[in-house]
Image (cartoon, rainbow, N blue to C red; front, side):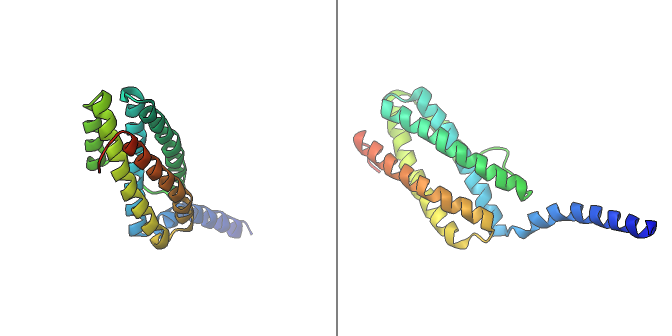
Length: 173
């Protein structure tokens, strides 16, 4: 009886160690690539939003920046939770293209910053909406798909706000 109990304990321990590895393996390569890009983009949105709050000349830019920090911060936290649960590797920093945009914005101030920020937010959110629409039909992991479907309408609202903001500032695409 003791031997059976000991084997059961060892088996349960081994199984508990294997489950997290299986969770990470269940996420497809394409889902992992999407997660990596979405995480980097989310970090960029928050950082650029902070810059907008600090460097923006117009209240509209500052307010939009605050919305980016709040909304993308929340989405980033939700994605981080999924990444952690699935035992995926979270990017430690933004990828090169996102970092480049933040660096370009950081070098500007006042009205010049406002126009560049508005233009970039329109371009970036157009790309994000397209990526999330595509992901909505292709992501295989159910929890990740739920996050995509929850986040997409927020991105669509951001895109509309960015377009309105760019128009008010006289920014052309």
